[in-house]
Every structure is written in C-alpha cells, then in structure tokens.
Length: 183
Image 1 (cartoon, helix red, strand yellow):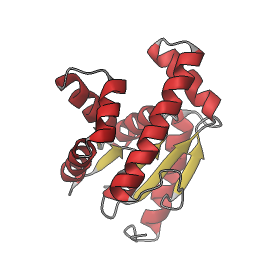
Image 2 (cartoon, rainbow, N blue to C red):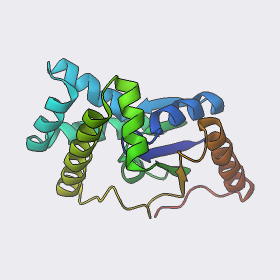
Image 3 (tube, helix red, strand yellow):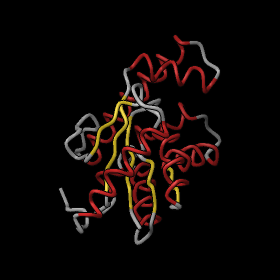
Image 4 (cartoon, rainbow, N blue to C red):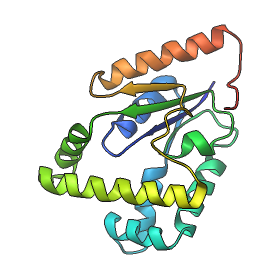
C-alpha cells in the first residue's frame, strides 16, 4: 500500500494525525518519539534529562534513527518522526504538520498538565536541543520544508480533515502510477 513519513515540531499534532492516518489506511504505526521516551525510561531519566544526555551522546540519536529505518524497511507504515523524511528511503509521501509556536505550546501544556509558561520553556529548550543535535549529527536543518511533499497547518485543519487531504494526495500519486521519487 504505502510508506508515509510524518514530521513536525513538538505540539504540531504529528502523532495524533499519524496514528489516525495509520488506522484509517490500515497501516502499521511507528513512532520515534515513543521509542525515545522508552529509552529515557529505561535509562531512569525524564525526557528533559535524557534529551540533555543526547546532546552529549550522539549515539542515542543514531541508535534511534537506525532503529526507525530498520523497523520501517519494506513495510506499509506511517512513520511519525521529526527526521523520517530524511531517513526513510523512498517513501510514497512525506508530510509535515506545522502550527504556530503559541498554539503548539498551548497543546503541550494541555496534554502534559503544565502551565503555559512551563510548556513554552520546555518547547523552546527541546526545539533548540533537537535543531542543534540534528544539524551537528546529520547536517539536517529541521526547519527546512523543501524535503516534504505536503506541509499542512494543523491549527487550520482538524486531524480527520488532514487525513482526507493526505488520502487525496495518495490517490493522485496512485492515479499517475508512480512510486515516490527521491528528492
């Protein structure tokens, strides 16, 4: 059927959408964020502390990224990961969700039971850490949208509406009878 990558910054709705899309299309769902959180738990650290450790130990990110590539290879899957658009070979479609910073912080505050101020602080720290790490490790700028086929503002559309947009894109690709080209 399809291999679809879904990227986006924290709070963009990436995971909510990716899970729904996988369910709607009958595809496997793979979340690099869930794996990273599990790695943090196994290391006896909270997410912030583990992220700071990853800043010093690049093997953490490399291990995570190698794992997502291995787990997605040859499968019909939706890969939910900030770096999947760069890491997964020849996906059928690369989707990125965006939303304004305040909206993303508000969503994270609501989801994690934080004050808005604390969510803003955490989102800023996390984004800066990841932006720096990915640039240093892979020379990837996660702010670069050119790698994506579709960029959708999740503050404008509901998750089921985003699924409908992506289904239309997949139908159009299928109608043209072409497999995704490498960018």
